[in-house]
Structure formats: C-alpha cells, structure tokens
Amino acid sequence: MATPTADASRAELIESVDALLPQTQCGKCGQPGCRPYAEAIVDGEAINHCPPGGEATVARLAELTGREPVPLAEPAQSPLVAWIREDECIGCTKCIQACPVDAILGAAKRMHTVIADECTGCELCVAPCPVDCIDLLPHPAWEAAESDAARDAYLARRAALGRRRHRAREQRLARQAREKRLERQKRLIQQRQRSADTAAAGPTPQRQRQMAVKAAEQALRRARQQLAHAERQGDATTREAAQQQVDAAQRLLDDARRAL
Image 1 (spheres, rainbow, N blue to C red):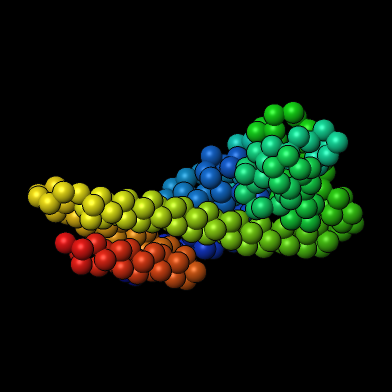
Image 2 (cartoon, rainbow, N blue to C red):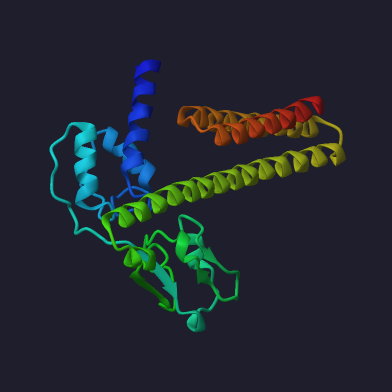
C-alpha cells in the first residue's frame, strides 16, 4: 500500500513531468491528454511519445526522470493551427465537441471559426468534420518568431494556455456529467415517491419508498467516490464541486428516508 509520503512524491513528480509537456492535448502519445501522459511516464511509460514536444522535450524528460534520452517514436511536429474554410462549414458542431481546449466558436447550423491564439494544433477537430473543411497550417505566431527566445516564449504561452483551458474544459464536462447523473437520480426518486403517494394502500407503496431510498443511497455512494477521486487528484476546484454533489445527494437521501 502506498504511503502518504509516497503519494505526495508521485504527485510532485507528475506535476514536474506535466510542466515539461507541450500541453497540445493531442493524444499522439496514446493518452487522452498531457496530464495522463505525465502520469503514465511516472508509472513507467516511455518518454519519447510526444511529437509536438520534439527532441527537446525528450531530453528534458530524460534529465528529470534519470532515464536515457531516446529518439522520438514519431517525427517531431512544429506548431500548427486549425483553419476552418468557413464558406464550406455546415455548422455540425462536431469540431467544437472534439476540441480539447474550447478554441472553436460556433453553434448548431451556424458557421464555426477557430480562435487561432488559443488553438494548440492538436488536429482532433479534423477527423470528425463530415465535409472536410478544416486545414492544418503552420501557426502564425510560430512563423513570426525570429529567434530561439521568441520561439521558446511562444511555446511557453501555448503550454500555459493549453493547460489552463484543457483543465477548465475537463472540470466543466465533469460538473455537467455529475449534474446530469444527480438530476436523473432526483427524477427517479420523485417519480417513485409520486407513485407511492398515489398507489393503493398495501405493501407496494412502501416498497417503492424503499426503492427510492436505495436509489438515493446509490447516488450518495457515487458522489462520495467522485469526491475521493477529486481529493486524490488534489484539485481544489474539482474537490469543491464534488463536495457540493455529495451534499446534494445527502439531501436527496434525507428526503427519501423521511418519506418512508
């Protein structure tokens, strides 16, 4: 069993590894983002699976982890930007859903456009497009950089923005998923309570109330599991949101038990 000290040391190493990754969130490493790849590296994954990071990132990871630097598994990739040919866009929103950093603006049946300064060039928007109207181009900010210092500054800005926007998106999606699950449980409990209130006298209404309690207990268990996961991740915002879900689930359970 891992000790608290070992867990803290692992978390610190994950943060250090993640800080060296380019934060394109492209998945070319085989993981669903840079943070999961950092966790995988700490757990033994190879350090040469990040084309956007290039050989420089491999070298920095080797120095940090004490491993031997090895050639990239895939060719290095210069910074890119997605470009939507807007006159061909049908407004399907599939690229918006795929973007890991919410860098695409638009709505259903409305033209979409990429916010170039926020695009990490991950390429994840290209495949879902049903009309193939998205091009990948050299990023203009990268092309405009005339020195190593300017290029390093651009990469640092891209990484900071990519990390922040990806984290915000993941938190938003997780919050929405929790809210949907809790709302489904709430509707189920309310439905069962209404059925119990209107049903004929006998064992059936009591059974329905018991089922409502059981559903509320399940919702509370799931909320507590999500809270425990958030605490292990060490993210204060996610932990706060998870605690709110626990409190809401506890109120639902209290209501269901009072109906017995």
